[in-house]
Image (cartoon, rainbow, N blue to C red; front, side):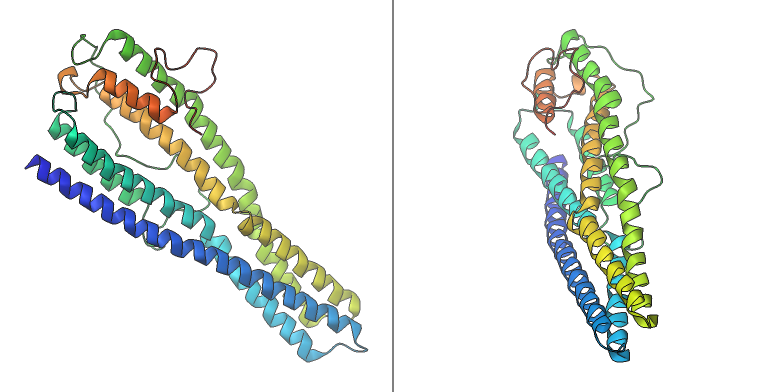
Length: 327
């Protein structure tokens, strides 16, 4: 029955991985289409406004056309600033990857000798919690439960269920591959992840969020200014100011959306989430009875590979600033 239940979870994870991959491609296409539309529309409006300054008297029809084009571009910029298509695509790519990883983890675990893997009941609770956490952390719809694009508090993305760390740690007893050396090395790794790696990527994500928010506000504002100046401008100087505002709007929008600042913010947040999930997994494993844990040597090797390091003792020297080398 446990094997059948685990197969069901793996099948659900594979299906979700496919769904997120499809939606990720769709939202990446949204990003490309929106970026191209904004650039073409704003440049066309700027050309009309510039041509309007060259005629003897301003043409009302050209002013209206420039106003409509700039207004439409401002609307597209506002949508792109609100939903951050590049960030949406990165969310779905990450969700697809971790759902696929969950399915492969289950398939691999079922092939391992039962004496070396975690207790089956505990493992089933763990993978079910991971699947539910991924569903909450990476929702498929944009509304009403979509991720906030400019959160007030930047936190690591949620890649696993929240473990109960209120229990005390259970010391190793040199059985099931768990020695004092492995236990101390893993605890040292968890401490380094919490104080260094996670904080490093949360700080990097916060540093990207601030300029991204400013750019997201600036681009539509410049486009609206360009639209108003192109409509009310009666003198060439005002028309030229509208042209300049439109050009600035294109540059700001291109740097924000074309440069995919939102995607970079999400990437850093997911890196922090990757290390946070690993740190929490180590802490929760230390609170499971030794006889119910995965084999200590195998678990130590798995953590080393996830960190991008060789399976050695210790995993990293005391002079190194971070535990992870993968990113």
